[in-house]
Amino acid sequence: ESILFFFFSCLNDYNSQITCTWMDFFFFYDLVGMILYHRDNVIMENKEMYCKRQTENDLHETPDVYVHWVCRNSTDYFGFGVQDIYGFKPKKMLQAELNVDLFQNVQPLPPQNLSVSSMTSGDFLLTWKTADGSQMLGSVLEYEVTYKREWESWEGAASLLLSNTTHCSLSREDLFPGSSYTARVRARPGQASGFSGLYSEWSMEASWKTPEGGLQPRNLRCLFNGGDRLTCSWEVKKAITTSVLFGLFFRVAPASEEEECSPVHEKSLPHIPYVVQSCEILVSNSSSQSQYSVSVRAKTEEKLIETYKNIQVLPPANVSVTATENQEYELRWTKHTMGYSFITQRYQVEYWENNQYEKVT
Image (tube, rainbow, N blue to C red; front, side):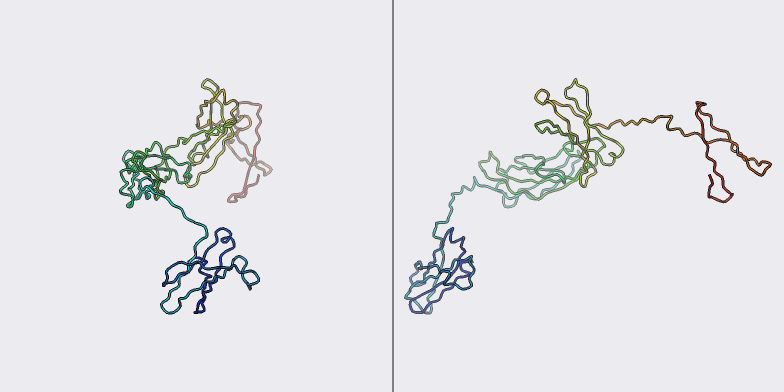
């Protein structure tokens, strides 16, 4: 029931006059405007009622968001068995029409029962079935399958277009090891079928996980911003990044000297044991040189240690204690001979009473 009938009421004098009151919104009145009509079950003919808008002086404590109407009509029929029907219709014609060709306006139901299973080859098989309500279209449908890692957005998902089949295989070579994947599928009439229309909604999603892989860097890709930056990113296993540093190396031309990109930035990925590392290469002249060779590999780390600043002398040998005549004790030992006689040695002596562990230096 519309809001017009919510505020609608009609009274009569049981002689000749019918008076009805109703309200509509100001904004609706400005847009359309409504006509109130009346008929009874005697004449069965719609008759417009004369309506007059009430002024503010006629109203008491009425919200100012409404337009108030009083409508009157005269009739000769009152009594038991007389049924009065009232209705509203807009002053403007409000309608839309369309001639529909069923076979040129098809939107199938979403595919059902999408599932993923692993194959003996290590690849993954996706299967689904045509929705029960669209089975007559089964032979003319084509499908779009999209899949991605769980943490990625669907906008960047990989996509496959298939015809006359309800399954497809995903090669393990195209998937990242140790990753959780999600896939979905939708259907539309095939272009060569004589049918046309829209894609269905997406099916329910199906998920699977790929086996763990090796330690090699993966997913290396580079994107040029069209100006002066070539940004490269790759993924490496988180467990080895604390001990192994990876670097990005590039050549501007095959014969040019290899350069190392710096600095390398790192970002953790949620829920997977990998991190994303990236580096920006400055591009100085893209118009004359647009082919770059890039590689990611573990860096060889080196550290300079100067031997003369890092000497640890072997401990003295043949330590002995001798009592002297004046009740003192003399300690003797044999010092370690070093390669150079001009290097002097300093000694630290500790002593303590038997069964006492506090040492005195």
